[in-house]
Amino acid sequence: MEMNKHLVKAGNVVIGDGRIVVQTMCNTHTDDIEGTVAQTLRLSAAGAELVRITVPGLADVPHIAEIRRRVREAGCDVPLVADIHFSAETAIACAPVVEKVRINPGNFHKDHEKAREKFAEFLEVCKKYGTAVRIGLNHGSLGAFITEKYGNTPRAMAEAAMEWIRMAVEHDFYNVVVSLKASNTVVMVEAYRLLQRAMEEYGHVFPLHVGVTEAGNGDSGRIKSCVGIASVLSAGIGDTVRVSLTEDPEAELPVARYLSDMYSRNGKVFRSKTPPVVFQTNPPKNLPAPVDCGNISSRELRMLEAACEWGPKLLRREVDDITFPEDMDPAEAEYLRNEILQAARRRFYKPEYIACPGCGRTMYNLQAAFEEVKAKTAHLKDVVIAVMGCVVNGPGEMADADWGYVGEGNHKVSIYKGRTPLLRHIPEEEAADRLVALIESDRSARRSR
Image 1 (cartoon, rainbow, N blue to C red):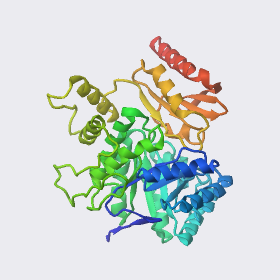
Image 2 (image 1 turned 90 degrees about the horizontal axis):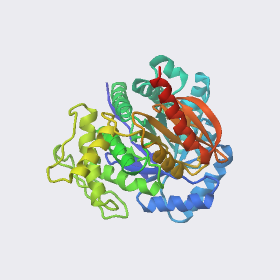
Image 3 (image 1 turned 45 degrees about the horizontal axis):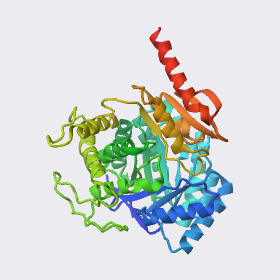
Image 4 (image 1 turned 90 degrees about the vertical axis):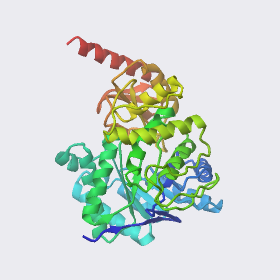
């Protein structure tokens, strides 16, 4: 079968030509036009080549249109990506006013055939305006149509993506990027591997957006992101990355640039505010590509290098443990070993946290809440706890979590066990303690059985 490898154009950015494109997402509210414009300009100056902005509903379409106008007026040509959940009408309305739209077509309608009809309508608008599309499917947010066939599995994620890919090809639309994100690195890597193989067998290979969703923050979030993303990029899969941290979005960019510099494949120079790096064309497999170390401390660089070296080996089951040079500080070596093994889901030495980075749908101080939850649950082990910014997609995307802390807005929180809400409308100041009490009560009950 003839192989068609498609390039995607979002504004002035080409995705799929061998260089790993760096992107991030605003965490401002979209109706805060001045704040979102200011953050977009900062992110572009810091090296973001695409900036995503949530558009919760039709009322926010004029806001993102005005944001784009002001960003361009400021002399910034960074492409803007509208992030849409559920509303096909909002996606269709955004297509003429941004360079790219991120959707999950399966969420366009509960009736799968109607979702397909809406997706076809959306593609026609994107074709008319030259708008790029990201088909973004996350583990845990798959519709019943696909999970009833394949379960909530990597195969289900790949099969779901292929349905929409085939529809795009049937409608002669090729300006498509695809993502299959998960907070579980094992699931995420397997899903991308299956999708890449399925696209090759189909004869149409589209660029892939790679990321570990809801990775958390601090060292753990960076290590987990590198373990998952490096495992995909080192296999020659992937064309654009986002490192999702529960921090200010500027903090994501040094790690994303590091990964881009390490794994880009076409010898081009990365254009950022830091000194340029010239990449090798087809570098020897055993030698790392040159990397841009701007804004990365020597400690963080060692951490990222270790995660990128050992993460893929652990996920491919080539090794079962990690060794470091004898002259490395023993405490640092043990810390990195534990973090990387946990990120690869080979050994758990502390709670596993899933935390979204926050966006314009977040209605409370997500970063502060996450730090409080971590502090109050640090004594627990063998438990997965999710801290999510909103009820729109939080409960679905915390698929691997045992427990969930989900913001409702108005300083209230819902607490979930798995996907079942146990408590709703809990005041923020009580929520972390109530979560811990529920976890400990559940553990005591299980021990007494």
